[in-house]
Length: 113
Image 1 (cartoon, helix red, strand yellow):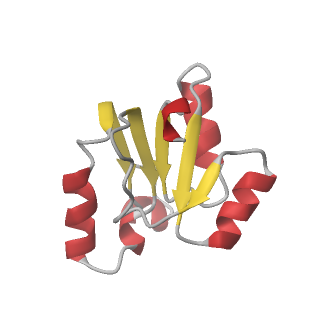
Image 2 (cartoon, rainbow, N blue to C red; image 1 turned 90 degrees about the horizontal axis):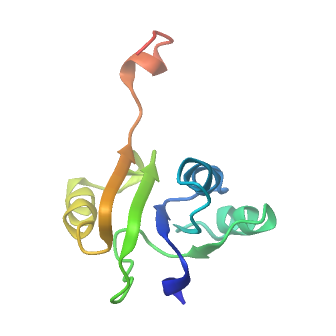
């Protein structure tokens, strides 16, 4: 049941962003989704709430999260249509804000950003 969660982490991998979301939001309770069952298992083993789901097609029902995070997910989507679909769907489950992070070319090259 999603109503017990304050925020949603798309592409949670092993749960680092779920932990960061909890720390930065003064203890809000988050749930992560990832398409990879092994990564979800690792997140759960680390004590995080996570479920196997596709971020592009995920249906939160009528539940609205206070915020949504996604750290390094967009570059793993199969094409621009999937990316656009995900971004267009974000406003429905988000009450306050969405935080989307992608790789930085400068950071990849070892330069400060």
